[in-house]
Amino acid sequence: MKIAVLAGDGIGPEIVAEAVKVLNALGERFELSEAKVGGAAYDAHGHPLPPETLSLARESDAILFGAVGDWKYDALERRLRPEQAILGLRRELGLFANFRPAILYPQLADASTLKPEVVSGLDILIVRELNGDVYFGQPRGLREVEDGPFKGAREGFDTMRYSEPEVRRIGRVAFEAARQRQRRVTSVDKSNVLETSQLWREVMIEVSKDYPDVELSHMYVDNAAMQLVRAPKSFDVVVTGNLFGDILSDQASMLTGSIGMLPSASLNDRKQGLYEPSHGSAPDIAGKGLANPLATILSAAMMLRYSFGRNDLAGRIEAAVERVLADGLRTADIAEAGKASVGTREMGDAVVAAL
Ligand code: ATP
Ligand code: MG
Image 1 (cartoon, rainbow, N blue to C red):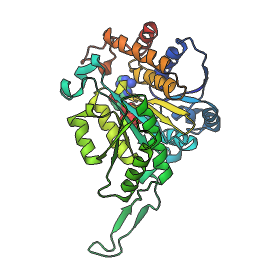
Image 2 (cartoon, rainbow, N blue to C red):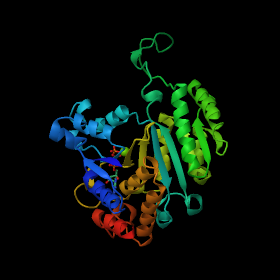
Image 3 (spheres, rainbow, N blue to C red):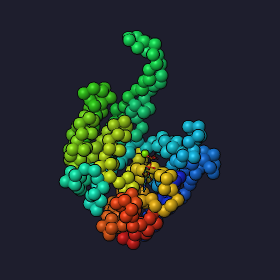
Image 4 (cartoon, rainbow, N blue to C red):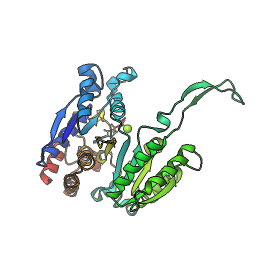
């Protein structure tokens, strides 16, 4: 199990150190190699994703990623900014499937803005396609309006597109994931309006024939946004395109009320994956030992589950996290104001002890 450890900037090094500690406490043999990424790599090598970091990532089975970015790099030209590192890794490794679970831990039920009966026990998985859609479709650009009342004015345009194989592979990934869960997939599209979505829906139906044990339903994205707030527990796995997934996954994460708790995974078709917390580099609290390491620790659990097929080890980490929450340990982000009981390192230590 070869793992590239890319801690990055801001709180990245602090939270990744705790996840590494947890991995090492499992009593398995992991081959961990560290490399710089983001602003830290720019400072050391003049590029946010230097060749040595990229080749380490390529050779590894999985990447444990912290976070990148800091205001001090804002003045750099775009290709040198820290954020380019994560975009480059996604592209170079073909990481097309983004997994974002939204889980409400019973111990943190107060954190949600929704009523307890609506969210208690919430456990949904959003599977977002990451390489296609309107973000990358060509042509795109700025031009002049040719006719009509706005003739001569500037207009911006983008192209929404998905090919059949792209939809099929994200569909398969979602159905496979559903088999490890409640065996229900909701495909979200806007097929009443968009051609791309009509193809999307057709292909999802075709894929579902190979998974007779999994129930497929379809929902328009506007309705999905509403249902996520009205009855979030009615979902198991949600599969959707890049644009809709961007929005819905952020919406779903806020149902749990705690940004410091949510892991994520981005996978390619070789089950190579990049695992990172859903939150960013939090420069405002970097270096202070205040950050919650649990999203990163839970990302390491996702790595064991999805890249290494070790549900047993993933389950042990998740149970240990529940245990420390039940014991009342709280970093500032999940505590009532002024009632934090632990910092980054103590939280990591507690998870290790619970293991
Ligand atoms: P990005 O653009 O990288 O996603 P962002 O601007 O969305 O970054 P984050 O870095 O995610 O912002 O931080 C948002 C807020 O949440 C900040 O106030 C930050 O301190 C807090 N925060 C983020 N992650 C954690 C964490 N692990 N523990 C505690 N607080 C956190
Ligand atoms: Mg953000």
